[in-house]
Length: 443
Image 1 (cartoon, one colour):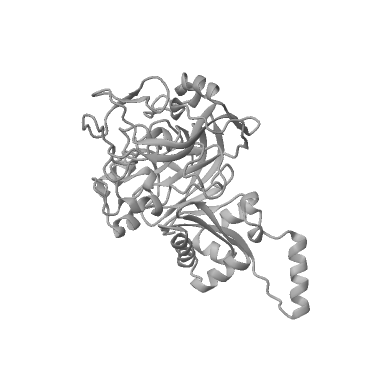
Image 2 (cartoon, helix red, strand yellow):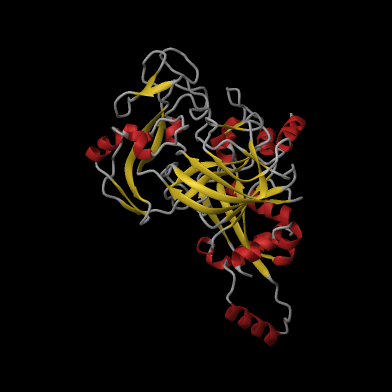
Protein backbone atom coordinates (compact mmCIF):
# COMPACT_ATOMS: atom_id res chain seq x y z
CA UNK A 1 0.00 0.00 0.00
CA UNK A 2 2.82 2.42 0.82
CA UNK A 3 4.38 1.95 -2.64
CA UNK A 4 1.05 2.52 -4.40
CA UNK A 5 0.42 5.59 -2.28
CA UNK A 6 3.86 7.02 -3.09
CA UNK A 7 3.30 6.45 -6.80
CA UNK A 8 -0.12 8.12 -6.69
CA UNK A 9 1.29 11.15 -4.88
CA UNK A 10 4.19 11.68 -7.28
CA UNK A 11 2.11 11.10 -10.43
CA UNK A 12 0.68 14.63 -10.37
CA UNK A 13 2.68 17.89 -10.50
CA UNK A 14 2.55 19.80 -7.19
CA UNK A 15 0.40 22.91 -6.93
CA UNK A 16 1.31 26.07 -5.02
CA UNK A 17 -2.18 26.73 -3.71
CA UNK A 18 -4.94 24.29 -2.80
CA UNK A 19 -8.39 24.65 -1.25
CA UNK A 20 -10.07 21.77 0.61
CA UNK A 21 -13.79 21.60 1.31
CA UNK A 22 -14.27 17.83 1.58
CA UNK A 23 -14.25 15.73 4.75
CA UNK A 24 -13.70 12.18 5.98
CA UNK A 25 -16.76 11.40 8.16
CA UNK A 26 -14.71 10.73 11.25
CA UNK A 27 -11.88 8.52 10.00
CA UNK A 28 -8.25 9.32 9.15
CA UNK A 29 -5.51 7.01 7.92
CA UNK A 30 -4.00 5.39 4.82
CA UNK A 31 -7.43 4.40 3.46
CA UNK A 32 -8.33 8.06 2.87
CA UNK A 33 -7.56 9.40 -0.61
CA UNK A 34 -5.17 12.34 -0.50
CA UNK A 35 -5.63 15.54 -2.44
CA UNK A 36 -2.72 17.37 -4.02
CA UNK A 37 0.18 17.15 -3.93
CA UNK A 38 0.76 20.62 -2.54
CA UNK A 39 4.20 22.05 -3.23
CA UNK A 40 6.72 22.44 -0.43
CA UNK A 41 6.17 26.07 0.58
CA UNK A 42 2.62 26.02 -0.79
CA UNK A 43 -0.57 27.37 0.74
CA UNK A 44 -3.47 25.26 1.96
CA UNK A 45 -6.88 26.84 2.50
CA UNK A 46 -9.64 24.92 4.23
CA UNK A 47 -13.21 25.47 5.25
CA UNK A 48 -14.00 23.24 8.22
CA UNK A 49 -17.25 22.25 9.94
CA UNK A 50 -17.54 22.00 13.73
CA UNK A 51 -15.93 19.10 15.54
CA UNK A 52 -17.22 17.15 18.54
CA UNK A 53 -20.92 17.68 19.21
CA UNK A 54 -22.18 17.73 15.61
CA UNK A 55 -20.41 14.48 14.65
CA UNK A 56 -21.21 13.00 18.08
CA UNK A 57 -24.97 13.26 17.48
CA UNK A 58 -24.65 12.03 13.86
CA UNK A 59 -24.59 8.21 14.17
CA UNK A 60 -23.15 7.58 10.70
CA UNK A 61 -19.82 9.07 11.84
CA UNK A 62 -16.99 6.74 12.87
CA UNK A 63 -15.15 9.36 14.92
CA UNK A 64 -15.88 12.40 17.02
CA UNK A 65 -14.84 15.06 14.48
CA UNK A 66 -15.34 16.03 10.85
CA UNK A 67 -11.88 16.92 9.52
CA UNK A 68 -10.67 17.73 6.03
CA UNK A 69 -9.63 15.20 3.44
CA UNK A 70 -5.84 14.81 3.79
CA UNK A 71 -3.44 16.67 1.51
CA UNK A 72 -0.17 15.21 0.22
CA UNK A 73 2.88 17.47 0.51
CA UNK A 74 5.47 17.11 -2.24
CA UNK A 75 8.78 15.77 -0.95
CA UNK A 76 7.46 14.70 2.45
CA UNK A 77 8.68 11.19 3.24
CA UNK A 78 8.30 8.94 6.26
CA UNK A 79 10.82 10.13 8.85
CA UNK A 80 10.53 13.79 7.83
CA UNK A 81 8.42 16.47 9.48
CA UNK A 82 6.19 19.20 8.06
CA UNK A 83 5.92 22.72 9.49
CA UNK A 84 2.40 24.17 9.31
CA UNK A 85 2.32 27.95 9.64
CA UNK A 86 -1.18 29.17 10.50
CA UNK A 87 -1.42 32.42 8.55
CA UNK A 88 -5.14 33.11 8.96
CA UNK A 89 -7.95 31.68 11.07
CA UNK A 90 -11.55 32.95 11.06
CA UNK A 91 -14.76 31.73 12.67
CA UNK A 92 -17.74 31.61 10.28
CA UNK A 93 -20.45 30.23 12.61
CA UNK A 94 -22.93 32.76 13.99
CA UNK A 95 -23.66 30.53 17.00
CA UNK A 96 -22.86 27.15 18.48
CA UNK A 97 -23.74 24.94 21.43
CA UNK A 98 -21.68 22.83 23.79
CA UNK A 99 -21.53 21.48 27.32
CA UNK A 100 -21.01 18.48 29.53
CA UNK A 101 -21.94 15.17 27.91
CA UNK A 102 -23.40 11.87 29.01
CA UNK A 103 -23.71 8.65 27.01
CA UNK A 104 -27.01 6.96 26.14
CA UNK A 105 -26.41 3.34 27.05
CA UNK A 106 -27.47 0.65 24.61
CA UNK A 107 -26.69 2.71 21.50
CA UNK A 108 -23.02 1.94 20.95
CA UNK A 109 -20.43 -0.85 21.03
CA UNK A 110 -17.83 0.09 23.62
CA UNK A 111 -17.24 3.67 22.40
CA UNK A 112 -20.08 6.08 21.51
CA UNK A 113 -17.74 8.28 19.46
CA UNK A 114 -16.83 5.40 17.16
CA UNK A 115 -19.36 2.56 17.06
CA UNK A 116 -22.95 3.82 17.21
CA UNK A 117 -26.06 1.85 16.27
CA UNK A 118 -29.83 2.28 16.42
CA UNK A 119 -31.20 0.50 19.47
CA UNK A 120 -34.63 0.18 17.86
CA UNK A 121 -33.76 -1.46 14.52
CA UNK A 122 -30.15 -2.54 15.12
CA UNK A 123 -28.70 -0.65 12.12
CA UNK A 124 -24.99 0.06 12.52
CA UNK A 125 -23.98 3.69 11.87
CA UNK A 126 -27.47 4.50 10.59
CA UNK A 127 -28.26 7.41 8.33
CA UNK A 128 -30.33 9.92 10.28
CA UNK A 129 -32.17 13.20 10.07
CA UNK A 130 -33.39 16.04 12.27
CA UNK A 131 -37.06 16.30 13.25
CA UNK A 132 -37.94 19.44 15.18
CA UNK A 133 -35.68 20.65 17.98
CA UNK A 134 -34.55 19.40 21.37
CA UNK A 135 -32.77 16.32 22.66
CA UNK A 136 -35.12 13.93 20.82
CA UNK A 137 -34.60 15.57 17.41
CA UNK A 138 -32.10 13.09 15.90
CA UNK A 139 -34.01 10.29 14.17
CA UNK A 140 -32.99 7.06 12.42
CA UNK A 141 -33.76 7.05 8.69
CA UNK A 142 -34.53 3.32 8.79
CA UNK A 143 -37.10 3.17 11.58
CA UNK A 144 -37.71 6.72 12.79
CA UNK A 145 -36.53 6.08 16.36
CA UNK A 146 -34.61 8.71 18.33
CA UNK A 147 -31.02 7.60 17.86
CA UNK A 148 -28.37 9.93 19.37
CA UNK A 149 -25.80 8.21 21.60
CA UNK A 150 -25.16 11.46 23.50
CA UNK A 151 -27.08 13.81 25.79
CA UNK A 152 -26.22 17.05 27.52
CA UNK A 153 -25.76 16.86 31.28
CA UNK A 154 -25.41 20.63 31.23
CA UNK A 155 -25.25 22.72 28.09
CA UNK A 156 -25.38 26.18 26.61
CA UNK A 157 -26.00 27.99 23.35
CA UNK A 158 -23.65 30.86 22.54
CA UNK A 159 -23.75 33.59 19.89
CA UNK A 160 -20.49 34.82 18.40
CA UNK A 161 -19.07 38.16 17.22
CA UNK A 162 -16.04 37.30 15.09
CA UNK A 163 -15.23 40.94 14.31
CA UNK A 164 -15.00 42.04 17.95
CA UNK A 165 -13.96 38.66 19.37
CA UNK A 166 -16.69 38.47 22.00
CA UNK A 167 -19.54 36.02 22.63
CA UNK A 168 -22.62 35.60 24.82
CA UNK A 169 -24.70 32.63 25.98
CA UNK A 170 -28.45 32.97 25.35
CA UNK A 171 -31.75 32.00 26.94
CA UNK A 172 -34.07 29.19 25.91
CA UNK A 173 -36.24 31.35 23.69
CA UNK A 174 -33.25 32.51 21.63
CA UNK A 175 -31.81 28.97 21.58
CA UNK A 176 -35.09 27.63 20.18
CA UNK A 177 -35.08 30.30 17.49
CA UNK A 178 -31.50 29.45 16.49
CA UNK A 179 -32.35 25.73 16.46
CA UNK A 180 -35.05 26.39 13.85
CA UNK A 181 -32.33 27.47 11.41
CA UNK A 182 -29.44 25.46 12.82
CA UNK A 183 -27.38 24.59 9.68
CA UNK A 184 -27.32 28.25 8.58
CA UNK A 185 -26.45 29.56 12.05
CA UNK A 186 -23.68 26.94 12.29
CA UNK A 187 -22.49 27.89 8.78
CA UNK A 188 -22.14 24.20 7.92
CA UNK A 189 -20.11 23.82 4.70
CA UNK A 190 -21.93 22.36 1.71
CA UNK A 191 -20.25 18.95 1.93
CA UNK A 192 -20.43 18.62 5.71
CA UNK A 193 -22.44 15.55 6.74
CA UNK A 194 -23.04 16.28 10.43
CA UNK A 195 -26.19 17.50 12.15
CA UNK A 196 -25.86 20.89 13.81
CA UNK A 197 -25.71 20.69 17.59
CA UNK A 198 -27.80 23.88 17.70
CA UNK A 199 -30.78 21.62 16.92
CA UNK A 200 -30.72 20.30 20.50
CA UNK A 201 -31.27 23.83 21.89
CA UNK A 202 -29.89 23.20 25.40
CA UNK A 203 -29.60 26.59 27.16
CA UNK A 204 -28.77 26.15 30.85
CA UNK A 205 -26.61 29.25 31.49
CA UNK A 206 -27.86 32.37 29.66
CA UNK A 207 -26.10 35.73 29.85
CA UNK A 208 -22.48 34.57 30.23
CA UNK A 209 -20.11 36.88 28.33
CA UNK A 210 -16.87 35.30 27.07
CA UNK A 211 -13.86 36.35 25.04
CA UNK A 212 -13.31 34.68 21.68
CA UNK A 213 -9.84 33.30 20.93
CA UNK A 214 -10.22 30.82 18.07
CA UNK A 215 -7.85 27.91 17.52
CA UNK A 216 -7.74 24.48 15.87
CA UNK A 217 -8.28 21.47 18.11
CA UNK A 218 -7.32 18.79 15.56
CA UNK A 219 -4.60 19.55 13.02
CA UNK A 220 -1.66 17.52 11.83
CA UNK A 221 -0.67 14.60 9.67
CA UNK A 222 -2.17 11.24 8.79
CA UNK A 223 -1.48 8.32 11.15
CA UNK A 224 0.00 5.14 9.71
CA UNK A 225 -3.17 3.13 10.46
CA UNK A 226 -6.84 4.02 10.12
CA UNK A 227 -7.94 5.72 13.35
CA UNK A 228 -11.11 7.60 14.32
CA UNK A 229 -10.09 11.25 13.96
CA UNK A 230 -10.91 12.22 17.55
CA UNK A 231 -8.76 9.32 18.79
CA UNK A 232 -5.50 10.45 17.12
CA UNK A 233 -3.93 11.02 20.54
CA UNK A 234 -3.12 8.94 23.58
CA UNK A 235 -5.89 9.93 25.99
CA UNK A 236 -8.87 9.41 23.65
CA UNK A 237 -6.85 6.80 21.77
CA UNK A 238 -6.54 4.56 24.81
CA UNK A 239 -10.19 3.56 24.27
CA UNK A 240 -9.18 1.85 21.02
CA UNK A 241 -6.97 -0.60 22.91
CA UNK A 242 -8.82 -3.90 23.02
CA UNK A 243 -12.06 -2.22 21.87
CA UNK A 244 -15.05 -4.33 20.69
CA UNK A 245 -15.19 -2.74 17.23
CA UNK A 246 -13.21 -2.84 13.98
CA UNK A 247 -10.85 -0.01 14.92
CA UNK A 248 -9.45 -1.87 17.91
CA UNK A 249 -5.67 -1.64 18.34
CA UNK A 250 -3.07 -2.88 20.73
CA UNK A 251 -1.24 -0.34 22.88
CA UNK A 252 1.85 -0.74 20.71
CA UNK A 253 -0.11 -0.32 17.45
CA UNK A 254 -1.79 2.85 18.69
CA UNK A 255 1.43 4.52 19.78
CA UNK A 256 3.27 3.54 16.60
CA UNK A 257 0.50 4.87 14.35
CA UNK A 258 -0.88 8.05 15.92
CA UNK A 259 0.44 11.54 15.18
CA UNK A 260 -1.29 13.37 18.07
CA UNK A 261 -3.18 15.74 15.79
CA UNK A 262 -6.08 15.91 18.24
CA UNK A 263 -4.51 17.97 21.00
CA UNK A 264 -7.05 20.72 21.85
CA UNK A 265 -4.17 23.10 22.50
CA UNK A 266 -5.54 26.63 22.64
CA UNK A 267 -2.29 28.19 21.40
CA UNK A 268 -2.56 26.38 18.04
CA UNK A 269 -3.95 29.57 16.61
CA UNK A 270 -3.25 32.25 14.03
CA UNK A 271 0.46 33.07 13.94
CA UNK A 272 1.82 29.86 15.44
CA UNK A 273 3.92 27.19 13.71
CA UNK A 274 3.11 23.51 14.26
CA UNK A 275 5.75 20.93 13.29
CA UNK A 276 4.24 17.48 12.71
CA UNK A 277 5.62 13.96 12.15
CA UNK A 278 5.36 12.29 8.74
CA UNK A 279 4.20 8.69 9.13
CA UNK A 280 2.83 8.06 5.62
CA UNK A 281 4.29 9.14 2.27
CA UNK A 282 3.16 12.69 1.52
CA UNK A 283 2.33 13.44 5.17
CA UNK A 284 -1.42 13.75 4.59
CA UNK A 285 -2.04 17.11 6.26
CA UNK A 286 -5.58 17.51 7.64
CA UNK A 287 -7.34 19.95 9.94
CA UNK A 288 -10.58 20.62 11.75
CA UNK A 289 -12.26 20.99 15.16
CA UNK A 290 -11.99 24.79 15.30
CA UNK A 291 -13.00 26.21 18.68
CA UNK A 292 -14.18 29.76 19.27
CA UNK A 293 -12.55 29.78 22.71
CA UNK A 294 -11.16 27.53 25.41
CA UNK A 295 -9.08 27.91 28.54
CA UNK A 296 -6.25 25.54 29.38
CA UNK A 297 -7.49 22.01 29.93
CA UNK A 298 -10.84 21.92 28.10
CA UNK A 299 -12.22 21.23 31.58
CA UNK A 300 -15.80 20.46 30.49
CA UNK A 301 -14.60 17.85 28.00
CA UNK A 302 -15.90 19.97 25.11
CA UNK A 303 -15.55 23.59 24.07
CA UNK A 304 -17.27 25.83 21.51
CA UNK A 305 -16.94 23.97 18.20
CA UNK A 306 -17.45 26.18 15.16
CA UNK A 307 -17.19 26.27 11.39
CA UNK A 308 -14.27 28.31 10.12
CA UNK A 309 -11.75 29.21 7.45
CA UNK A 310 -8.03 28.50 7.86
CA UNK A 311 -5.04 29.32 5.68
CA UNK A 312 -1.70 27.65 6.30
CA UNK A 313 1.63 27.47 4.52
CA UNK A 314 3.59 24.24 4.57
CA UNK A 315 7.34 23.53 4.75
CA UNK A 316 9.00 20.11 4.69
CA UNK A 317 11.72 19.54 7.30
CA UNK A 318 13.89 16.68 6.08
CA UNK A 319 15.12 13.93 8.40
CA UNK A 320 13.38 15.19 11.52
CA UNK A 321 11.75 12.07 12.94
CA UNK A 322 9.08 12.92 15.50
CA UNK A 323 6.59 10.93 17.54
CA UNK A 324 4.31 13.93 18.05
CA UNK A 325 4.04 17.66 17.33
CA UNK A 326 6.40 20.48 18.18
CA UNK A 327 4.74 23.87 18.61
CA UNK A 328 6.24 27.33 18.19
CA UNK A 329 3.72 29.37 20.13
CA UNK A 330 2.99 33.06 19.75
CA UNK A 331 4.92 35.13 22.27
CA UNK A 332 1.68 36.03 24.08
CA UNK A 333 0.99 32.31 24.56
CA UNK A 334 4.45 31.36 25.83
CA UNK A 335 4.80 30.82 29.59
CA UNK A 336 6.63 33.83 31.09
CA UNK A 337 9.79 31.86 31.89
CA UNK A 338 10.17 30.75 28.25
CA UNK A 339 9.87 34.15 26.61
CA UNK A 340 13.03 35.37 24.86
CA UNK A 341 14.89 38.07 26.72
CA UNK A 342 14.99 41.62 25.42
CA UNK A 343 18.22 43.22 24.23
CA UNK A 344 18.47 45.05 27.56
CA UNK A 345 17.95 41.86 29.54
CA UNK A 346 20.62 40.07 27.51
CA UNK A 347 23.00 42.95 28.19
CA UNK A 348 22.34 42.67 31.93
CA UNK A 349 22.87 38.89 31.78
CA UNK A 350 26.24 39.45 30.09
CA UNK A 351 27.18 41.97 32.78
CA UNK A 352 26.12 39.52 35.50
CA UNK A 353 28.26 36.81 33.94
CA UNK A 354 31.24 39.13 33.67
CA UNK A 355 31.03 39.96 37.38
CA UNK A 356 31.24 36.26 38.24
CA UNK A 357 33.60 35.09 35.52
CA UNK A 358 31.01 33.30 33.39
CA UNK A 359 31.86 34.65 29.94
CA UNK A 360 29.77 32.28 27.78
CA UNK A 361 26.06 32.96 27.56
CA UNK A 362 23.99 30.42 25.67
CA UNK A 363 21.86 31.50 22.73
CA UNK A 364 18.43 29.90 22.98
CA UNK A 365 14.89 29.96 21.66
CA UNK A 366 11.49 28.75 22.88
CA UNK A 367 10.21 25.34 21.86
CA UNK A 368 7.12 23.40 22.95
CA UNK A 369 6.69 19.64 22.77
CA UNK A 370 3.18 18.18 22.89
CA UNK A 371 2.93 15.23 25.24
CA UNK A 372 0.00 12.83 25.42
CA UNK A 373 -0.93 9.93 27.66
CA UNK A 374 -3.75 8.21 29.47
CA UNK A 375 -3.54 10.88 32.20
CA UNK A 376 -1.66 14.10 32.88
CA UNK A 377 1.28 12.42 34.62
CA UNK A 378 1.84 10.09 31.66
CA UNK A 379 1.39 12.94 29.22
CA UNK A 380 3.95 15.08 31.04
CA UNK A 381 6.55 12.32 31.04
CA UNK A 382 5.79 11.64 27.37
CA UNK A 383 6.37 15.28 26.45
CA UNK A 384 9.60 15.46 28.43
CA UNK A 385 10.94 12.25 26.90
CA UNK A 386 10.01 13.43 23.42
CA UNK A 387 11.95 16.61 24.10
CA UNK A 388 15.00 14.64 25.20
CA UNK A 389 14.83 12.28 22.24
CA UNK A 390 14.54 15.03 19.63
CA UNK A 391 17.07 17.47 21.08
CA UNK A 392 19.60 14.91 22.29
CA UNK A 393 19.61 16.51 25.73
CA UNK A 394 19.64 14.23 28.76
CA UNK A 395 16.18 13.65 30.22
CA UNK A 396 17.32 15.15 33.52
CA UNK A 397 18.60 18.23 31.73
CA UNK A 398 15.25 18.70 30.01
CA UNK A 399 13.57 18.61 33.44
CA UNK A 400 15.95 21.27 34.74
CA UNK A 401 15.52 23.49 31.69
CA UNK A 402 11.71 23.16 31.79
CA UNK A 403 11.82 24.13 35.46
CA UNK A 404 13.87 27.33 35.20
CA UNK A 405 13.24 28.41 31.58
CA UNK A 406 9.82 26.96 30.83
CA UNK A 407 6.65 25.36 32.06
CA UNK A 408 4.26 22.42 31.86
CA UNK A 409 0.79 23.53 30.75
CA UNK A 410 -2.39 21.51 30.39
CA UNK A 411 -3.87 21.38 26.91
CA UNK A 412 -6.65 18.87 27.59
CA UNK A 413 -7.88 16.70 30.40
CA UNK A 414 -7.32 13.84 30.86
CA UNK A 415 -3.95 13.65 29.09
CA UNK A 416 -2.48 16.27 26.74
CA UNK A 417 0.14 18.80 27.83
CA UNK A 418 2.65 21.34 26.54
CA UNK A 419 6.29 21.02 27.63
CA UNK A 420 8.00 24.36 26.94
CA UNK A 421 11.55 25.51 27.57
CA UNK A 422 14.33 27.62 26.10
CA UNK A 423 16.46 25.31 23.96
CA UNK A 424 20.00 26.05 22.73
CA UNK A 425 19.84 27.48 19.22
CA UNK A 426 22.70 25.25 18.14
CA UNK A 427 20.46 22.23 18.81
CA UNK A 428 17.52 23.80 16.99
CA UNK A 429 19.77 24.48 14.01
CA UNK A 430 21.06 20.90 14.05
CA UNK A 431 17.59 19.36 13.95
CA UNK A 432 16.54 21.66 11.11
CA UNK A 433 14.17 24.15 12.71
CA UNK A 434 16.55 26.90 13.81
CA UNK A 435 15.46 29.16 10.96
CA UNK A 436 11.81 28.81 11.99
CA UNK A 437 12.58 29.68 15.61
CA UNK A 438 14.76 32.66 14.65
CA UNK A 439 12.10 33.97 12.26
CA UNK A 440 9.21 33.40 14.67
CA UNK A 441 10.86 35.11 17.63
CA UNK A 442 13.08 37.58 15.74
CA UNK A 443 16.25 36.16 17.30
